[in-house]
Image (cartoon, rainbow, N blue to C red; front, side, top):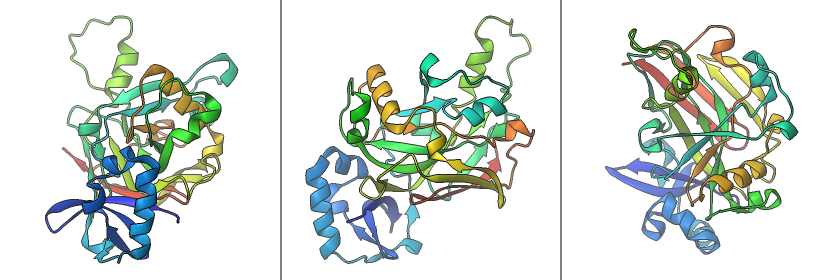
Length: 295
């Protein structure tokens, strides 16, 4: 059975369930949360399939608030420069994957991750807020020193994430320039609250057989800004899981954002502003929608 699981709020409580038709089968009593569901591995997947087959979709999707797929994830790892088109649109030179390695950074998940129809807040000390639509990989079991050809075995599913980024971080006028300033300003510009919208659902791997063949796009106010395919990644999902597992132990519910394609605002000088609506879409996974508001 193809599975999309969802974390939601309904009647004042947070729940966990699975989509079935236009409704949700409530699985909260069986598993508690998405993270607990993932930690149970194949046994929980089999149990969930049975419950969904027999259960009623008694909760309407229209009656709930969709939350991030794994709201209590421990890690949010992100990739920089994993699409040649994005590297080149920023003025960089693509030297080929054989001569380099994945560039991984982290965002603090507890303050950056927001969900479907939540609001991206433009901070008062930021000037150029940009969008980056990405395929997000959700880990299904502990991974450490995994071989590339085994990487997909550790993936539970996929969702959509938008790596919101500040391109021109305001710094005190009195700061004396020193080596590394530009890099740290870039990194700090990734960390603002609400800068990692994620969702709407977690699409499990039984529904996505090849994560490297998914159309992906992002629109701002209905205008398509990014449009491509996950097959354009330099490093595949399997390779990214392997590489990341060499750096840190991956745990069930951890998220890897796999990098973005060309079409970011920095290329044209157009950035997010108060009142905008952002929509990130990956075929077979879902459409993530967030509005933008100035702090």
